Image 1: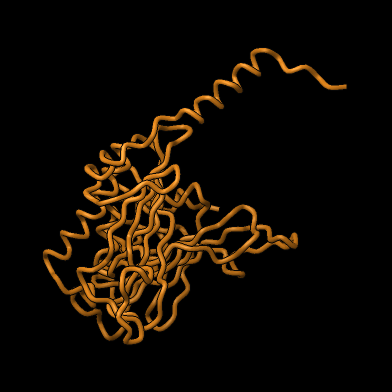
Image 2: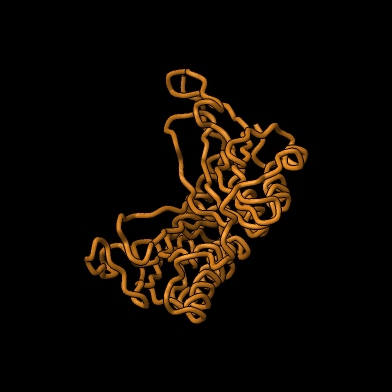
Length: 298
């Protein structure tokens, strides 16, 4: 027997449908002004683009025109929980990634991916995906901040850097594990003067099998160099809800994020991985990692 729909429920549904159908059109001129980028309507959205033409890019010796995938873009659409939504992809060189990521995170945007598209590219090219919900003004301002950061880097050094520009690391590794163990709260494995911390997580795969630290579902960090002049590299295993807090914590501490992606498919809960690289005193680096760990504990 069919149950009658209440007048209130029906009226609410009509109002919701009407609000979606009659959503105010996006103000393309305002978006262009706020982002500083040229754009055009694309269906129900407004898309701004920025072809990467300031530095020549080659892949295996072949000159890459912007049409072959080296154009940054951001697409604005009407939101549901907020005025607007934005999604985009930004073409970056290595020395632009950290400034662009900090700009996005500090201006109300989420960073949802970071990866490469090519082999044998010169200079190395990375792609940073962004997203967000909010007012058009805030979202467009975040996009503007990213491109202002890129321009600032290129104005200072027109040619993309090929190193961090820091003093060289010691030839011989002499990391003292005990202080780092105290900071991180885990036992570190030693190898050739280096020290490694591993913090496991657990997921269930589609087969019903449980995968944990030994299957690569873990946050890890390897310290090399000396206690005073160290490097740390590693991987954070995070839930989707933990990604943005972890990125903000690490980037504000001066840790470079070098990749954001997934390692598995079909796992529960969904796990993302961010790879990082940091330089400084070993204890300072460990403190920076520790500060981000509460958002990615098992």
